[in-house]
Length: 279
Image (cartoon, rainbow, N blue to C red; front, top):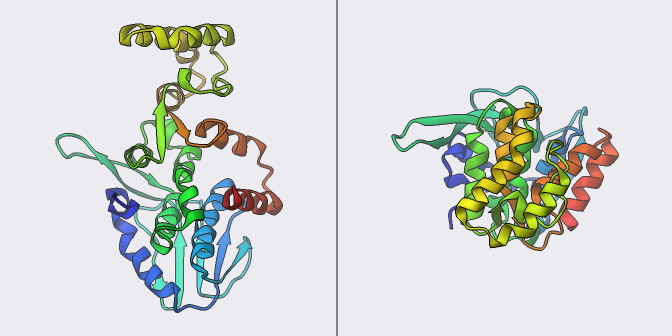
């Protein structure tokens, strides 16, 4: 099974993360500084889960705040062309978004997108606790940073697709159409008729491949022509819905609910971290 760091998207930061991981067991209590955002919460949850799995002492702080080192700082601001500088002794690591190669076409031409702090934290967590129970349960959340970002509003997100393909190949998620989702999957797709959705779902399993293609295209057409949601997001919500074993709802719905209920407070940040780690 491939690790996240074997994906090309992580190549610019892989050596930094390995160096930090090598120093963690020899470090004093490490401080994790995060912004009071969903991205900060999920990134911190990955790191905290891994440190709990391996008994590494840490403390969480919510920015803005002065901190001492060793530290890992999560930033979700300006995207740069490369990872920020770091030090491994003492640990001074800043995980912030940067551009990287997500996928290549059949001719080897690269497609660049953004590697989120969430994905970077997930890769470091995987190094810290590769077999950690808490860490493994969080695996699907590696997608959250890119899903909540702006790239899918502007075009295809090659890093998101690379991460999604990786999770599917290792068996962490299943990717299905919207008509194979158990929960009310059309909440975000305001222009899809609920009655047509229900009736299409009833006959879905009896249709052949051509029938399914026609049915789903007819169902989604009002959303496509409304021009209210970017096409890349519609594609993911309709044709590439994510299912996580044991979850009561599809993963896109879970991410949408968190973002929709977010109030920006430190309490919300801490509450989400605790829920992610314990559940």
